[in-house]
Image (cartoon, rainbow, N blue to C red; front, top):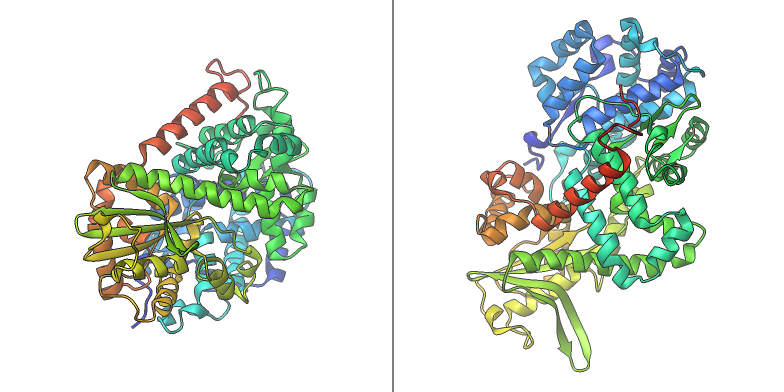
Length: 567
């Protein structure tokens, strides 16, 4: 039986089928040679904001909005004559994130220099751009998947597919929820991280010439003002004018120096490896053109400036700080996740250990109970080597994942030890209220949102079974991979009693056992009746709104001063 559920699969319009044209970089170069670089990169970024921007619009709405934006009804009908019988805009994307990022890379190599502001007013020029985009789609597919076929994924072969499945999900899905991103970023870096890394504020200021509060204000303000509520409009913003008539007029140029790059720098990055090109985009996701035009090239990379970006400023010119910085961030993330679990469950116990003489045999971050079920949480913030999933070989990716999450002392190993001990009643220090469960749910809470990619859960569950090696009773349920965004979105519903997490996980286990073994917890919730009962974390929501409102008040005063220009 194939493991991939059709509801979770999107396909892409194909240049060969739609136009009968070749899908080679040489042909893309011919199409791009007469297109102006500046306007082409901006058009790519605007379409990318529509199809992968921050927001909750469905993929079908995003696909339709992108085609409306490009305004080529005859070309759209031609594409639909091919994709329509197979689901049309619901299942086939004409534009998507990975394709548009690849097209930007081709554009800086092959487009003509010099701005031509009204170039894309002409339909024939937009049609030429569309053809170049469809070539880029085919080239992206070849780079990402080569001859791989995810219809062949089974439990026995899942390790052969995990790398490209992660990349496909990463480059065809929208940016993370902006509410979670802003709220979590502030709580992690303003509250939790400094407790474990007291040098944070001084080192951040030394590296950036800004305080973290100032940096957060700039990123949160731009993110909320440009993207929120405008997800399907593809707006462009003259970012260099922000704050010109505000108290941030001396601060914002320092911010731009950190997160922006010139077209020349972008072109230079395009000559490197795929991993180097992606690194250049996420480090500096804003492009400033000589005439003052500017654009955020990718909403996903831009959102990372809040979720992980501050860490990497500390490492600029100081790589020797890496071990201490990442260790402290891991502890901060555990504190953050534990705080959510504590608010969800009144009986939650945090940071429990099992002793073996004077040594600690294992520890878990949190244990909570619902009726006769026990939920065991292990939170981990691990950073994977993206170069292992940026090409098309994916060499050593599975081994790297095993090292980060499954090896001794890491999340899956800890959960195997703790749940095995609970099931055998071999944990004397465990509070009595958790001593006799009928169900035990091991849960990895991951900072890495892409651990919800198809295949990861199957792989982790296989490794968990090996670690248990039959040395656990029937009460231990299959391991659950839960991203931090899922935990945040569950908090309000569980805390209020609208959702029983144990019941939800029981239903999810039935889903992966009987229906779709590859299904992530996130997708299960999205396609189930639980989606209607989700209530996000009031703490994260409150901090997000507070941060965004403060940032917008500073950067975009109500009288319009310093508000820049949009189109």
